[in-house]
Image (cartoon, rainbow, N blue to C red; front, side):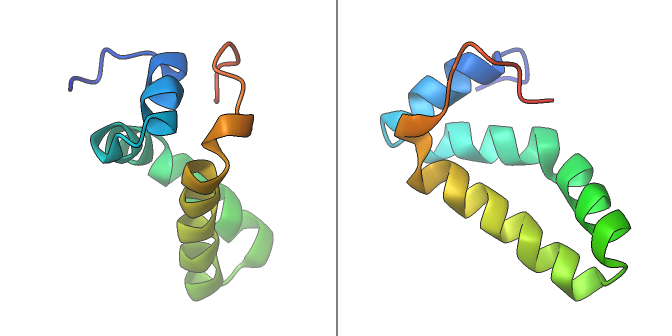
Length: 72
């Protein structure tokens, strides 16, 4: 996969169980999610936990994500 895939395409692939698509989405947004969590919590460990939780939930609830919405 390349970084040229849209968020929507990745969401559809994640719904189909494609872990590479989840990895691409993670690489694309991990810094943004981490920085946001750190700005809210002021705690590196909590921010890391939130980062992992966000992507675990994205995978677990992929069938509920709207592939027509840009994620960032």
